[in-house]
Length: 275
Ligand code: HPA
Image 1 (spheres, protein in one colour):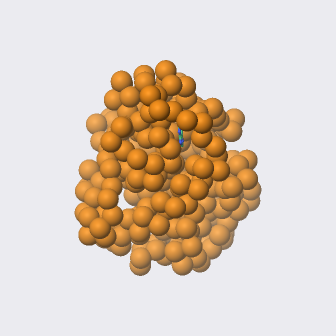
Image 2: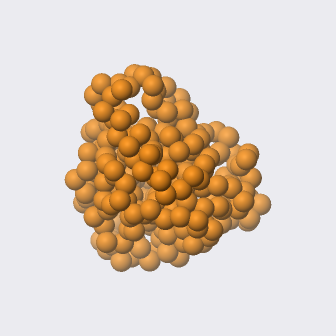
Image 3: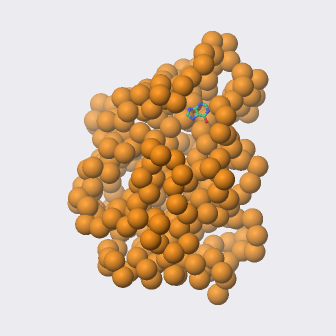
């Protein structure tokens, strides 16, 4: 057994002393999705700090807890608080909770994030369903010896985000009369926002939105044959021609304002997912 597999097992064994929940859906609550946590009928919350090998959140605005409960009648586990490369974690740490979710029974992963809009047709406050991504982190969570019991050495990435879940999200948004965008997300290390020249470059290579998360978790989920849905709240407009300074306060304000749209879509998707 590889060390990673042993660590996963130790985390799962610990969680099993606290709950026998069998969630089939995992949710990563990013910036702007805190409200969704309130919609979960909580049965159990476990602090990351108590779980063996779990990293601990450094960002003040993020709780660090694994929430077990039901949402729209489905058993879910949600990460309240996530990890970013810019905090100093390596990508194996960032993605460790996704590995654990898989071994708790999770088959589908819903990921949210805040991102900057690159596509000129998009506006701040828009919700974007991720159709694909570009990994510009300069790193990969799968580097190192591969554990074949977790997934293949060279995972296929022709469907990084599940077509089925994207369809479900689009249909849900339509029925809820919420306008959604769809586009390519590019991941940058951060923590600084990008320069005008970088935004121009990112747009040129085909990205519609830019952020600092989600891609590592997606890669690890795909490695383990999980289905992923990624949804971004576009919190600022990264248009080189008209770029203005943005503050974290503004980003959070826009995320909070757009959050009900994202929460409604996610909840509806969960409701419509197969049991
Ligand atoms: N870059 C630019 N704007 C953003 C980002 C980012 O990574 N995340 C949220 N808004």
